[in-house]
View: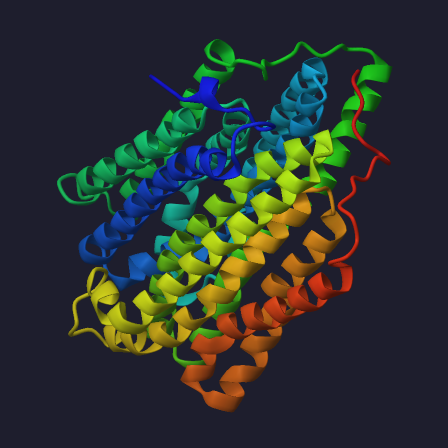
Length: 463
């Protein structure tokens, strides 16, 4: 497979060209991934029914948690390793990459084991009850292998892009997505496996993605080879220290994905309370569409991150500022475009999931235009958090992520439906995003004249 890694120089190539060389493969990979995720929803909606959509949506927080942990380790190691690479310390970067993979795999195995051993407890925590319990449990048990596979793939994509191979990272998104989509159709329609088939298709796609990452790390890396770690107590102590630092830097990534899970769970509970099962099914369509926009905005942040981190480590502030300006303009354009699409084409979007003669269709088609008003604010928020992570300002990045995804969001779902009814349900997410953008603006005005600096305390060391 051809890739463009030899053409990437994070410290010298023009910002526009460098950003484009990473952004378009990253975006294309994510779009393919989301296209087949939407295909999954369409197949489930038409082949199984609205209860299938609701069941998968109830389990989605687990996937968001695993993906968030993968992003936490991926962003953390990408920022730290990029700084080491900018100083020519390739050995330290390789050690950090190996430590991140080890920690991520261990965490995902533990989570998968807990979910498998205590299914009833986990499903109760997710709010699964009534007529949705049996189908949701079926999907849940067959879905669990994805925990480990998704961790490896998510973490690996960050490392592969930093190593200078954004096109291989793109293929590692596209190929598993195609396999997942094809197997969704095969398992749900010709094989009549229902939700079990949908879960198996996700497992197979995840397996291919994880194997592609493993292949790259073993046979194709340029700078970020896996490194054999020492087995001494000193080595273990430094490994734990490095993992702790990478976790702190990447922690906003976990909060961001956890916030998506909180959004889904809060929405499930709110829609169930105010509307019922039809409301949960309508909300599940919004949750199928949300990751599409979220991933596009993340593509901007993830493309800018290695550029910012590398030049931040090299002390090239002008290149950091240029990358930030470029990414903000792209984020605003994307957010505005998506908001307009939701405003004018929501009925068409819903038609892809459900027939217009079911009650869920009307609820979703009426509510999505309100829901879509928040995407402009979300794009700005994700861009701001990505920048703060890239320059190791993890505290501020975590604060804004907690505000947008937990504090403001839960408060909005608790208050707005009582004030504005069903419209308040759909405006809860946009309200949380808008309040966070205001907080970001206030923060930016307060620190805009301060020089960009890098925290050196607790920075990772070699073994």
